[in-house]
Length: 225
Image (cartoon, rainbow, N blue to C red; front, side, top):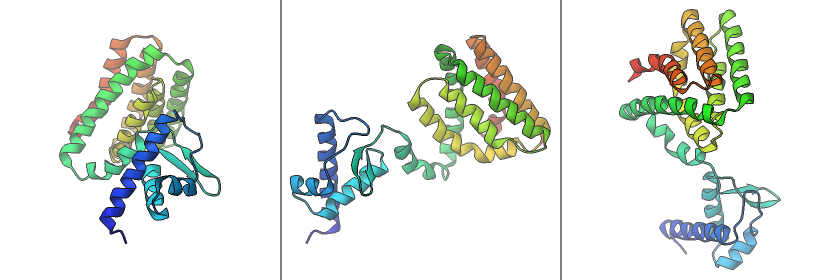
């Protein structure tokens, strides 16, 4: 009987073999992989080992298991990997400081990339989220969801899915800061105005102005560093 250490090693080997198979066959997202039984027979390992390998690969987004249907190649994504370590970041003061600085870099980069990509539909959506944000402020409510959606749409406007995923994960850490920032109507209205200034600068394709407006918008983050 295999001990737990041997099972882990075997599951890693099986994972590597499945990855090699995907690459050798030039498989794409949504392509169907051999069944669990076929993998067991081909690799000469137990059902438990194959299932452990598939489970770990599914957690990383490499494969997608559809019960009663089969095993499929998953889509490339950073999120499952980053989520594995994200809870640790919240316990590390130095890491949180670095995340604040990283968000600043990402946001400034996003306005430049949004100008390069220039997706008018995304810019219209940013305006719509800002309009909803203003309506919520008028009702005396904190516009946390709308603010998050505005920034997510800005990153989507870059046309870079990997950039969007990375920024989305980092943004998740700023929920508490958002709650504190929108603790007054005055600060909320200020954010609405700043959003509009950023969007206007992007529409004008003025990189320097867009970055300057984003710097102004992100200034409150400095007190958390």
